Length: 131
Image 1 (cartoon, rainbow, N blue to C red):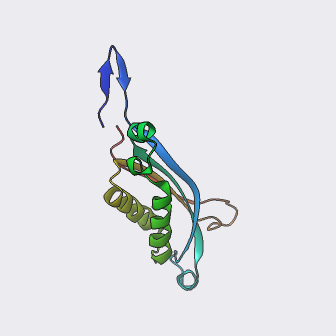
Image 2 (cartoon, rainbow, N blue to C red):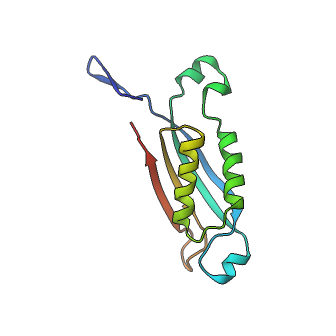
């Protein structure tokens, strides 16, 4: 997805499809008690795409199907047993880049309530090439 100069104007073909506040129960944490319960993690995603073909065809086959992404992540995260949100975030990005063939992803993994006095805690990572 390259930028093309047309009379001094750049045509960037990187659109973003987003998915926010995806809540998934999983085993996550470093403490013994956390290894025996499921906790909710909240995912926010921005995924690079070129939506022009889908906009022309009006067909789901020509775009990144965010419902398919949500279903895959719900299954993957729900079955995982990572200790660190950093590891979970890295594995989610690897899955998205590999399985959905997207060029770039920005992911926030939020483990709400993990720190007393803080509403949210987690990581934000970007992987791939944002062009």
